[in-house]
Amino acid sequence: MTEKYNKRHGGPYDRGHADSYYRRGENPHYYKGDTGSSEKVKAEDMTEDELDDYFAGYKANEELGDFKQWD
Image (cartoon, rainbow, N blue to C red):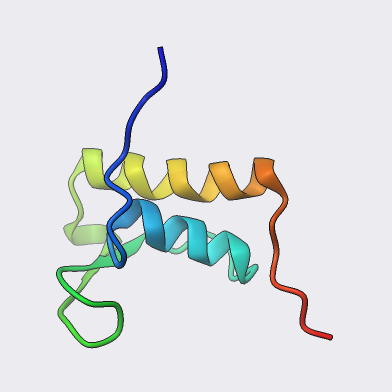
């Protein structure tokens, strides 16, 4: 059975995926609305489900190996 995550832009899964893509390291967070222009929720204020979504997004991109090429 495949787990399904809310992949909303700015959400926990999306932010985990982006942190991996840009090789920023794990730093759980998400935005309540649009990325960068709405309230940011930090790790200490995230629920277990939100943290699970963040780490799932991070892990998914790590396994995919899709990283930003800076050159």
